[in-house]
Length: 242
Image (cartoon, rainbow, N blue to C red; front, side):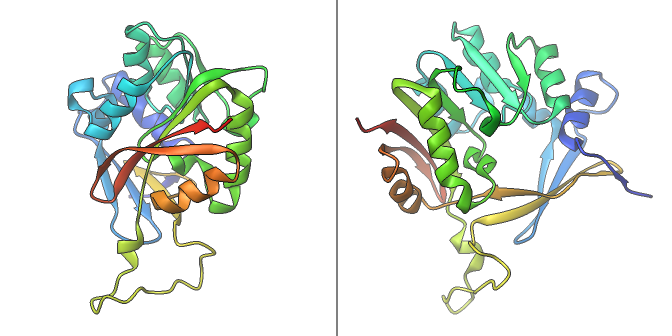
């Protein structure tokens, strides 16, 4: 089977699911440049609150005020918040994802990049879920991320995001840590997404241990609080330390 390049693999897959053109058990395969590939059934992107992991439930319960959902995907978190009365703006760089969100009934779904948002827009909560720190792309982009978040938050606002410590992926059998001479930072991962006969463009995704992320945030006057943790995965709240 020939493989076609598609700049919006995830968006195409979500729209297929909503159009009932495929079986709900069709998968999206995400291949990293380190470790094992991940396989996600399409129905996973449309899960209900009860089907969400603990970290996502905790984040939604801690959400306050006017919300910006970054990298919203199919918009399931935004939809839950919207249905409970929150004013939500959901953004994603995928045109297909934004179409899917509108079909699900998200009132304000915008195709844009977080870093391109107008500072005129202000929020009480900036939400980044499903290893949401990844949208930063690379560790070197963290200063720009915190500076942008600072501009977008109302006084007393918060960032709720999750990430993972992936240092275990570099562990050797003898307990030593493998070096990767091709990476500036080990948490900078490159992914490629596959769906049916389509292959997406590779994209960068950032992972970082909590303590290391906290240290960076402090330099931009954000204080951090660990809200939930399971194995190597954690949820953190950042608020402005004014």
